Image 1: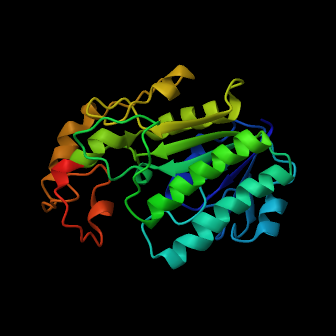
Image 2: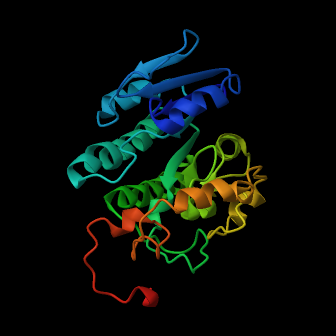
Image 3: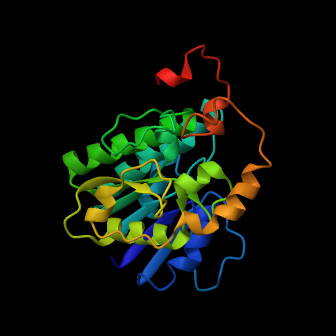
Length: 270
């Protein structure tokens, strides 16, 4: 990888990666629909709307690998998810194919599988259970990644990111916490590992209370350094401030699951 494009540069993860990836690759091009705050004079930034295919093709010129973080990053109405996370996701994969980009690391999310109960441990082969339109868009992106990997030869890694933060701040996030430096490890595996064709990894650190089997990432050399148990005091203090929520407390997706929830199903059956 000589030139890497990172979309979503102005978002929370993109902002941290601008520091964590500095110097890792000869050239990193940062892009977003809006200009990031505190953009350094040594950072190359290209403003673009990923809902525009021509803009995506221009972004991909001369690029070896893409880290696609761009799009709506929380649950929103379908009218907002569609252009950014569905159309924009297609545009990035298609532009990459047209411009002969070698690899894409797609930022998927734990919300693609949010409707699994916290009592169940799952791997990457379990079917998706999105907990909202945002989760649907991430499941769509994983499917696009598989299509472009097997039909068009792109090397694609989908990262089901848990909770990206310096420390886990409540009980749920003790299970899904992702230390920022561990995300960098996963990204580099996706961009650099010679044997990778298409894989789905869980974006999680070494969490003793974790719900996910991340053997796929471990086989490619992932060695997470973050341990959520080291922050149990802070997490439990944060948990004590939250109100009980029957649906959110049962499912892995937490409050995304309880938004607009109107099913009369027995939670324990699922």
